[in-house]
Length: 257
Image 1 (cartoon, helix red, strand yellow):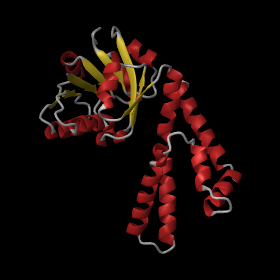
Image 2 (cartoon, helix red, strand yellow):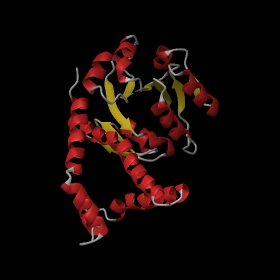
Image 3 (cartoon, one colour):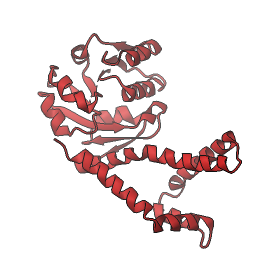
Image 4 (cartoon, rainbow, N blue to C red):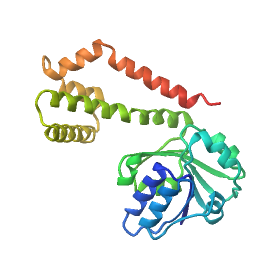
């Protein structure tokens, strides 16, 4: 299979890196020259990754194409290209609906939306796909947990979760900084936080029938220190404010021009 990318940013780099880490991977890749530095770096690392002369050359030489341009320039870039009806197009442009993309790249018959995570470079994380698409699921399935959804509203809701990554790391940073302020060395504090939360992240898999709140209650021993912090954060509406932030991101994703 020849896989083409229109747009060569961090997400394209992550997908290509993940694909090329798979043993016996036979997918040849043709990259947009849009980001010269990233494209050249990928081409120098892998023999079957090449950089096209322009975006149209990607379309002319590939049957499967992933759209990875920034939303701000997507309309301008895509409207200038000539797509074929038989192109299999996977859009990675999160804030543009499938209908918007389909209109821009007519006469393409098959358009799929996908949202992989940057950690796909290490063959971790998840990839959301709408609508269900066996070819896209097969491609992403070797790199991540594939979640196929039937409705665009479900895709949009799941997309909101990707807005929580920075907050998660700020949460860990707060704990790390507190430990340093209380005399723990930087390396010991970091090692402890990383190891502890890596183990906690596995808890839902080891108890697949338990809800997240059930797990919280299991760790929040009555009268214990876990219960104390959970109770105080709930009393200060921290989680309600967090949910309101999720609503705000959802509005931003779903209210389109």
